[in-house]
Image 1: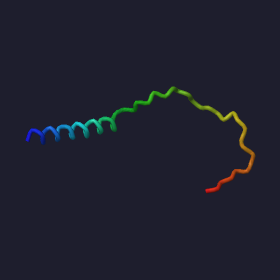
Image 2 (image 1 turned 45 degrees about the vertical axis):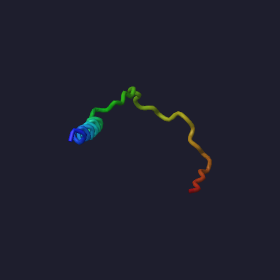
Image 3 (image 1 turned 90 degrees about the vertical axis):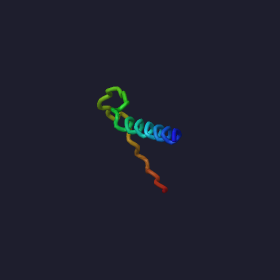
Image 4 (image 1 turned 180 degrees about the vertical axis):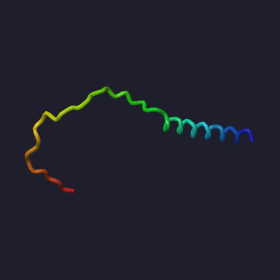
Amino acid sequence: MMMLSRIVAIITQFISEAAIEIFAPEHDDYPPTGFQPFTGEPYKGKANYDW
């Protein structure tokens, strides 16, 4: 009986931690880069799409 309650506790903790991670605020700390225009030259050759 003790082993069963321990397994249930481990499973409950695992599911709780997963739910907390899913619904937690984002961890991303991206720098504010703003708008970045394209400054290169467009490709003028023929594209070869061979799928």
